[in-house]
Image (cartoon, rainbow, N blue to C red):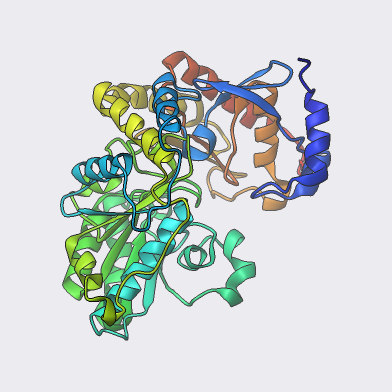
Amino acid sequence: MTLPSNVELRTRDLAHVWHPCTQMKDHEQYLPLLPLRRGLGIWLEDYAGKRYLDAISSWWVNLFGHANPRINAAVTAQLNTLPHVMFAGITHEPALRLAEELTALAPPGLTRCFFADSGSAAIEIAVKMSFHAWQNRGQARKTRFVTLANSYHGETLGALAVGNVELYKAIYRPLLMDVITVPSPDAYMRATDESDAACAARAFAALDVVLATQADEIAAVIIEPLVQCAGGMRMYNSLYLKLVREACSRYGVHLIADEIAVGFGRTGTMFACEQAAITPDFLCLSKGLTAGYMPMSVVLTGEEIYAAFYDDYSKLNAFLHSHSYAGNPLACAAALASLAIFREDNILVVNRTLAAHLQDTVTAAFAQHPQVSQVRHCGMISAVEFVQDKISREPYPWRERRHLAIHRYALEHGVLLRPLGNVIYFMPPYVITPQEIDQMVSVARAGLDHVANLGPVVA
């Protein structure tokens, strides 16, 4: 069979498809679509046979490589028995096993799993569940949510409301509930000679004032533990998690931990909350949950929240939220296979060496670059903030879209990068080798050099 060409597929696509997070006009000329035929390990291949190193785990989901044989086998076996069945009033072993394994791995006290199909859906569930739990307990005034500046929690309306990245949120503001926004503990914003921990404590002080004065109307605080990913891979000290957990308990407010991007080993521990030894009231997981195989999410919570909904039918206290593909057996099979790889291959320990190499390589390549203001790391995440002026940290004007020039340069040289504005980041699958890390970082460094030498406007 003759394969279609890259050009043919691009043409057919532009006639019918609308891609996410994209100005489609760009794909007509400046940013041609990348047609992919297959993936294997950390590599993707187009219809001309050119390969691309997946440096970002295909939007942070692919943990153990494309077409991983162990996950393939698990999904195939499940496909031959029970591909899907509704989850209302029905159960099956894959979902039961996954719930048992997740609650055993999660911070202590998270004993209940509510399944859904995307990260945004998980956030919606946690927000609704928090609000509804307070209503069921007769605390009708607790209707508001506290979020961090520069946070991102998804793009459905409830998730968008509790986020704070203006690029995504501004146009939809009239449709969104009003939230309370407090300063981020982002260590990039620390004062001169201020430590990361002191910066976190200073940010917490502002949150503490809000909770002390408004706790009677606040349902929950929502945070991305350790890394604000879509907000430019900004990172902060784990002290903040500890202080927020203590304050939420003190003032009677729920804590929602959005670990959709940072869960499953990405920060160096299975869950980022472990690094502060805290248990949130709600833990939202997705992305790496199925290792990039199937759409799935889950919200973990504890018996206290569960009890707020447990009652006689006539009380009408049940949590009436549903997804057609909740608990999908194929997704559960992929997730269970992924967790087995973590366990059998001792991934968290192996990743320490891999993360150290990633961090050393990125630091050596970028730390002294004249257009880099900061290099930062957290486990298997490294980020490079590039700027117009290193001393003042003045960024390049956003209209110049230099990040897209880096993206194009990297593709031309066989690496899939997708910088977030003026931030190049690396979030590779855990099966990457040290040599492939070197290749990935080398191309990114050359891409930054290329962009830094361009004229004032690149797109």
